[in-house]
Image (cartoon, rainbow, N blue to C red; front, side):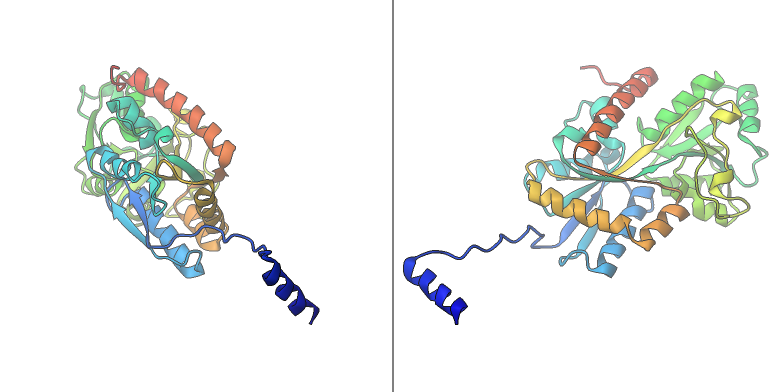
Length: 330
């Protein structure tokens, strides 16, 4: 009765009862815009996360995946950038947020979006066909040095992007020109390698793991400072058994972020919703299994930590792309 009396008094005196404001959440289907072709690492990751969100009901609204890899990913990135203040579109980002503004002077750098969270780092591996005579990266390097200029064909995803940046750095170490062939996705590059149409590619682990398991591809070395952590056998060896390229005489290292961004103008509440959701995603066993199977380095970051990473990584890409001759004149 006392509670009822208080409500009556409040109503008579015009005093509103205070209730906490509901936290923001999506009100319609959420679009994950993948600025790359179907079958590549970004596409696979986005679909894995989509499945985790659905399984654990981390969001009331469904997630839809759209692959928009035209113009080296600029098509997808531009769509998200132009969707100002729309909290129902997220960019599934990787190093294109550095390469596009540097190589093409496009307003598509990370500052043109609203950072949400980084969820992993991806390595790159030097792969050859399983029938290749090159059993180690040292074998490959020796053959490359002895081969005619441009006779080695390296496949990769797009032009002036991470795969070609690594290839150019590789050329400088070898002192020999490599013919780089850009494809629409890492999936296509892996298919071309399995068919022996190219000598090698520098795909992410996830883009070539199926061919490795099927006995169609062989990993020679990983372009990172240290070997990978995962010790479970994938095919004949484990990810952790793949030596670093540096240990094989190829002093080239590169890792790529895997992250999500909202369009410009997103609110703190909207960022917080997706950052929290992604934190729940990376805590699931399904994500842990996926990252182990695909050899992704687990790394969640949001807020200032994420922004600090972006600033440092952008500076690194400016240096690498300038040295490669890929930086556009301003």
